[in-house]
Image 1 (spheres, one colour):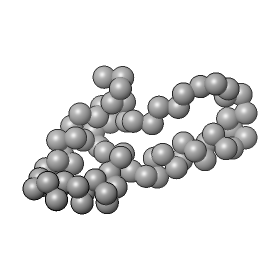
Image 2: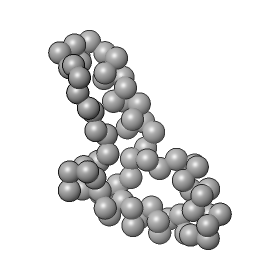
Image 3: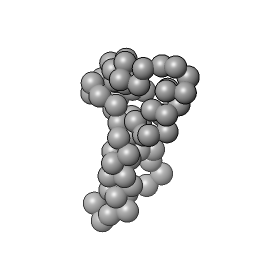
Image 4: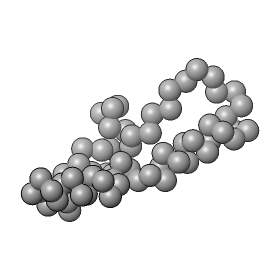
Length: 68
């Protein structure tokens, strides 16, 4: 998930944040980095009536990274 903390860490370690973002995005089947909203919408779904039949499941929100 691309957050300001990640960008700040890359800068303090001398890495180019834009190059790192491109390289990391290329590892995700969806072709881009996740954003905080991607996680938030998963939480909204789980808290909604739409998930009323979901029990004991793992909701993986990683842009397909672990499925590749």
